[in-house]
Amino acid sequence: MLAMTEAIRLLEGRPREFYCDACLAAALGIARPVVQDVVAGLVGRTDFRRVIERCDRCTRVTVAVGFVPPVKCAQCAWPIGDHDSFVADAGDLMHYHCWRILESSARLPS
View (spheres, rainbow, N blue to C red):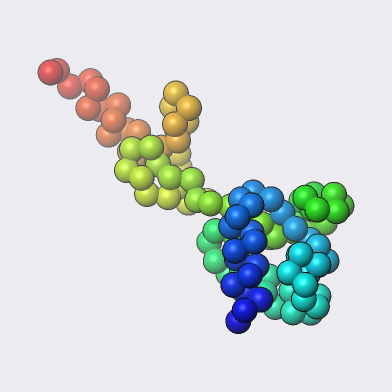
């Protein structure tokens, strides 16, 4: 579906910017019912979110969709999931278990 590809390209080019259905339809030049189908497909992916947010185009607070790249662990480089335990250490985000391994290694004698 061409509209889906165009929406992905638009939103991935503007990470963490959110668009309401009306503004996304206008930006893509397609009808709103088509955008609703596109958005339904996008939110099934792990890197797109549909949340109540301020639309970055019209500034209304409404339900909007945006591309949110996954946060990766500074230790293992795997994505940190929404339900994963994590630690912020010196500005880096790490899975809790990766941080525990790092901390344990630091305590071992050289």
